[in-house]
Image 1 (tube, rainbow, N blue to C red):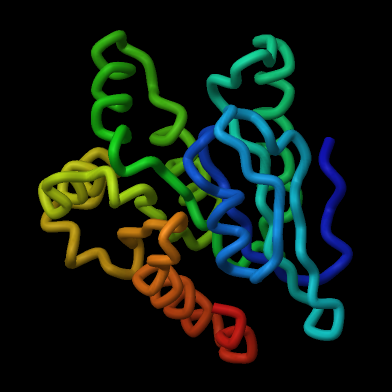
Image 2 (image 1 turned 60 degrees about the vertical axis):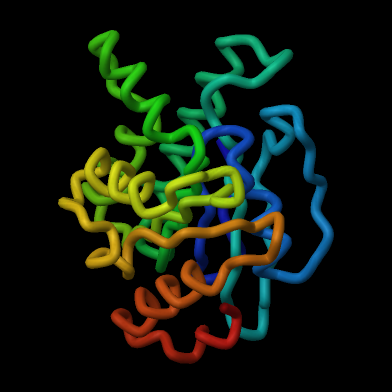
Length: 204
């Protein structure tokens, strides 16, 4: 459904709509991208390629609720994201799973109380199952009162026993809007080092 990259390797940003993926993309590549408050602004992948390095960072469309987007189109977008991840998994070095730290725990609990699997839990498990190294960017930390308790809750719901700090290579508190990305970039660099890709550390 979505065009594949023309380079060999990439880091992808994935997650629900309106969690700040595009703002984070802008922080990574230092370029201007369309950022909106309305969920679903990104309907096609935004990609920035360094052709000389055969490397890209790709912001995949968000899924879930999107104002003004009908359910059929939302499902097509979600299917497209899943297909993209499956098809290109060999070249995806890291998936940055972006979540809204201020709302994640409440949303997960609400879905599970209805006997449903939340999108984020499903996505995270899917990434692990297909073997893509994952870093969770717990974004919008500026809206969180008790950060440690919130991150412990996020870790637990994603299957990582608290305290969250023992999972620093997986869970990274982030505030893309304020340029607070150090923990995230550290975690991504750790994932790249694990794969012997020190040549790409300069991008994070």
